[in-house]
Length: 359
Image 1 (tube, rainbow, N blue to C red):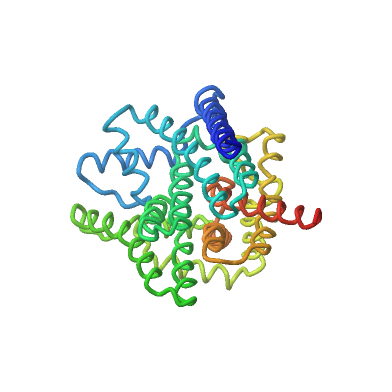
Image 2: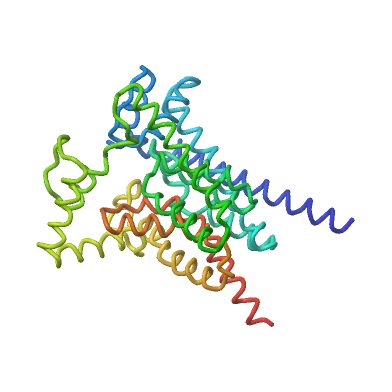
């Protein structure tokens, strides 16, 4: 009876937390007066409209435009996307709880991790934007949850869905494949990799059928020229962009290193140079800068873990986003899909450390 009551109290606590997360996100999406659109938002919507007409525009990766297109079949785009953001963000909180509980078998760690994700500003700020942050975070969190539950094929597919929205996650599945392969788990490593690759392959094949171009998106080259602050033309190829990047690195090494340091600071520093949605609000920017403590705690938690595949899966999105955006330009919003995993690791590490002190 006591165990049944405890389980009931746990369930009630989680439900109340999810309701609180829903309430916070409703306010963030609807009642803060913050804008819903950026230049990127308009481009995503344009690509969604082209998909709706049977075309395929290959600038941004077409994963998020595809999601917008699907939403537009059932509701007005703005209302539908914002409601989807709210729902997916709340489910992300639930997935964080389930991942942490499965990994640690500790309700307190799981509940605290989910609570931090529920109220952490960078996790609910982007609910009011028509951008990739919220759905990408949901799918990458779903992928890690399925991985922890040993549903490897489904995990790969979920990571593929995250990737077609945010291609800077590319190192996460690749590194996980290599880790599993090196540890002798060749069969599941191939299942994971093939499942992951199937998602972008299907979308790119569709793009080839309707446009004659086999690509997920072509913004990589433009991003290079943004990084090195040089004029860009749509006629530039990827190889030309890579050559320009290498020349910039070789000819201006001091400036290149400083800019790379600025990029990593903007990702994880405690007072970011930019903070969309919080511009001009120093208090909020300072709160947002808590991710500096979160990444330190997350690294500490990983070092305290057993380094199993499950804990490696938590760290891979962090590594991928950090490496790629350090080498290019960065923005505080780019860390959003990595933060839930650092929070789980951080809570785990600090909890384990505190328990060791008591014992």
